[in-house]
Image (cartoon, rainbow, N blue to C red; front, side, top):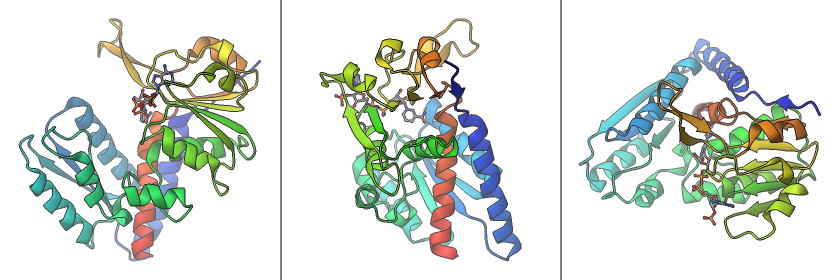
Length: 293
Ligand code: NAP
């Protein structure tokens, strides 16, 4: 079977160009640029890279961006004060607090302090609740990116059986909500996790499998029915002496043997990953439009 590769990198570039075009039209109309603020605490290498990429994406989209840095010893009170300030600032459309935070800070308390109208990560309980009710909300970036890929590749979802592997708050759970709801996926959804007994059988009956468990090469060819669509969210760092970095990113899908059975499949890297930051940009534009236009 010939499969089609879902190119997340190219799709993300196209969407960012579309956003940029929209922003330049607004600016030409005398409007200000959308403004995203990122709060970064400490010097964790991974977080530094993520935030740097978010700032670069802002530039590509014609957004204003501001990076607010704190050292590891920042107090919870100081961060809460900054969140309260950003909630009220008229020139800020959305902001994110890069996770993880140092252990002495209660991440959930910080998350809950963010006004849902500026929560472009879509992580606050109000946004998650609004999304579950089908109300206007910000959908977290990775699930939104996956739905967008399915839509842009004209892969039908309505009435299809979607099996999601993983039930995390940032991927599995919001993905299930999104695929289940009538106005988005309109699919029949099954969520599997580490205690699921019939996981292989569920996967074998799926039209679409979305793997988000962080177990390299977990999904093998014997778990996939011919013609299925497979979305690989997994990005585990696996040691690789041939790479300059000393590691490579490995997905949850055993790509070489699964791909030939699929109609569509995402690669790792270059599939879901690039869509995540792109959807953060889209959420920021939506937050701006909600306030300004
Ligand atoms: P997580 O919080 O680590 O949770 C993993 C989930 O997988 C849990 O629900 C767990 O089940 C389930 N699981 C683990 N082992 C399993 C097994 N053997 N069989 C069935 N289910 C199993 O997950 P996450 O944060 O969503 O991340 C998942 C992967 O996606 C990671 O590789 C992460 O790096 C990647 N990711 C990528 C992006 C991107 O933009 N590309 C974004 C986010 C995450 P229990 O609930 O029973 O423990």
